[in-house]
Each structure stands twice: as C-alpha cells, then as structure tokens.
Length: 423
Ligand code: SF4
Image (cartoon, rainbow, N blue to C red; front, side, top):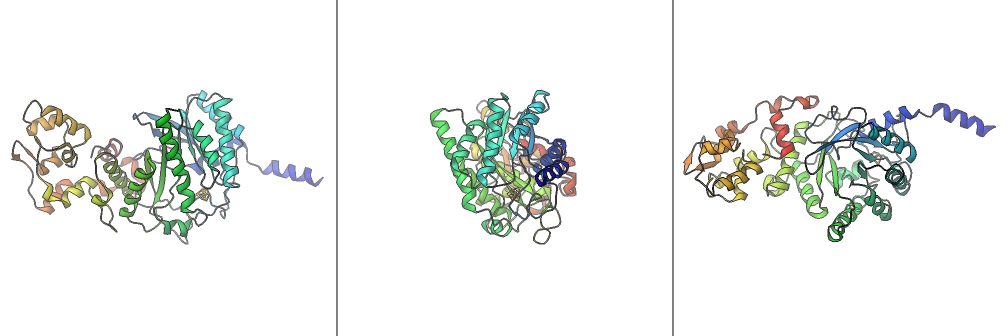
C-alpha cells in the first residue's frame, strides 16, 4: 500500500519528458567546450541546440544536453550544484537516444554534445553516458558527431570505451588555478582532472600510430574566467601547458556568469571582452609562434583596448620595422595586420617581385595597422615611434562600448579575427 502511494506521488511529481528536456538543455548551456568562440551565447543556444566548428571550419549544430542535473557535488560556481533548490531531472539512456535520434532525423542537429552532473558515483554517471552513446551508435545507427564529457574520477576503462564511440571528448579544467579549485570545488582534485586528460592524450597518440578510428576529433577543455582572481598571465601559461602536455585541440574560456554562490563569487558577470582577448591570445599561441611568457609577464592581464598582437608589438619596438621583402615568415606573422594567409601570400609574391604597399593592400594586409611596423622596399609609411600616437592608431574603434549582454553587436571585425585567427 505504502509502495503504491509512493509510486503514485512519484509519478505525479516527476517532470514530463519535455520538462526534463528543457531542464537538461538549460543546465548544459554554461559549458562552452563545444561552442563557437566569439558568437552570441544566447543566440547560439536556442532550444538546446548550439553550434561548433569542425577542424575544417564547417559549422555544425549540436544538441547540447545533460544526462542529469541532479548533482551530488557542490562546485560553488555551478548552477546545478547540490544545495540549490532547482528542478532536477535525469534521462535514461533510451530517452536520450530517442530525443537525439528524432532531432537528427528531422535535420535539426548534426550531432550531440553530452555532459552530466555527477548524479551518483563518477563510475555510474560515466557508465550511464556510455550506455547512451553505445545505444545511439549501435541500435539507432546514429552517424552524427558526438562530443562527450569524461567524468573525472571514473574508471579509465569507461573512458577508453567512450573514446571508441565519441568523436571528441573533453574534461573541464574548471578554474585556472589549484587554489581556485580547492576553494570553489573542493570535491574535484587536480589529479582527477589530469588523469583523464593524460589518458585521452595517450589514446590520441596511439590512434596516430595505429591508424585506428578512435576519438578522431581529439580532446578539448574549458575553464571559467573571472570566478577567481587569477590573472590572464596565469590563464595563458596554463593554456600553453594544456596544449603542450595533452595535445588539446582547443582550450575554451567561459566568462563567468553570476550563477554561482554569491557569498564566495562575484555578483557581476565577467566582461566578455576579456574572454575575447583570451581567444585572440590563444590563436597567437597555437598558430603564430608566440609563447605565453612573451605575451604577458607574471601577474599581468591582457590589454582590453588592444588585440594581443598589437599590444606585444607596441611593447617590442626594437623588433620593428621589418622589411617586407626579406623578413622571415615568423617575423611577418608578428606584424599587426598580417595574418597567416597574407603572410603566405607575401612569401609567394616576393619570389617574383619587390613588393610595394599597394601590393600588400591587394593581399588584404590591414595597412592601417601594419604600416607602422614595416618597410616596403626600404620605404616607411607609419606614424613613427611615439608610443601614444602608435597606440591610438592601433585601437579598435568601439571595442570598449560593449556591454556583456551585447556580444552579438560586438565589432564584427573582432569576431571574425577571433574565429579566423587573422590578427
Ligand atoms: S560536478 Fe560540479 S560543475 Fe559538474 S554539475 Fe556537479 S556541481 Fe556542477
């Protein structure tokens, strides 16, 4: 009798599938480790669907959802933490597959981004996610892209199996420093975060050696910026280590939204401009040959008014001007206004002729910025070495007038720079 009563009450109070879908897609939206940098967060997340870019630059839409938001952990920055009185929901593997499959068949999505709160032990959580992904691939014959979170602290065997079915996996770095992690997420140990990253890096290396089709899109990670007092120098140094040590495909930054515990966390959102500058610096680390230490000294933050390459050039006048007709590729890349594509075009074209400023213009070099740092056939057309004047010429108009909620209105030039890496 008691059991019957309990069952009836439970069924009455359990949210419907559509309510659970809403709760679980809403709960997933703060994780940025699949979504496009430089795009509007709300706009990119309508009805649980977000967008990500494949390595070849194709934009794909993903259903971004949690398996459960019923967390037993108490990470102070998280909107799903244990002590919050919020609607909780969990999907069974079959329910998750049904939803994903029906979205996929209707062409609403091209893939799945699956994460979860730790609703039981890390092993049980990861096992449930793995069941869903295996079911999706084997029974539903799902051919789409799958990005799956690895739950820190779970059995390495589960991660290994998951890597056989997912295209990409990620482990959240969470916060930029050990001290921040200890203070705000004491249940998450740095070694629990590092272990799956190490394992995924190993799987990636094996894949290259054996040619197996496993984890083809590699691993990524994300960290929250602005929840702790960590400076950009610390964040970039960590980013550099993550790329070098674990072969990350991307490190994502998430400007803190005030969804955490206001007793220990800021009540104002972190400026999205900071996130944008970090993405620009990240491009410089990955594609332009800069090191974190060159971009910032310990304790420094990126200049909010200048893109990081311009800021570096301004601090290093002794490196300029360079002769465009003879400078090595590595130095061309360091000139503000010359991106990777234009540097290649310069290398090609100067085999045939001595380049002039007009030639550079045709190659889409941004002369408004580059002219202060280059010679064309010995001719200089910049504004000289006066730092104040030079700085004013390098400022990007309108960059500071952006409020955190206006990111979609952010200078399209800057957004394009973040996405293409042409700095
Ligand atoms: S483990 Fe921490 S970050 Fe993840 S859902 Fe739970 S409280 Fe949030």
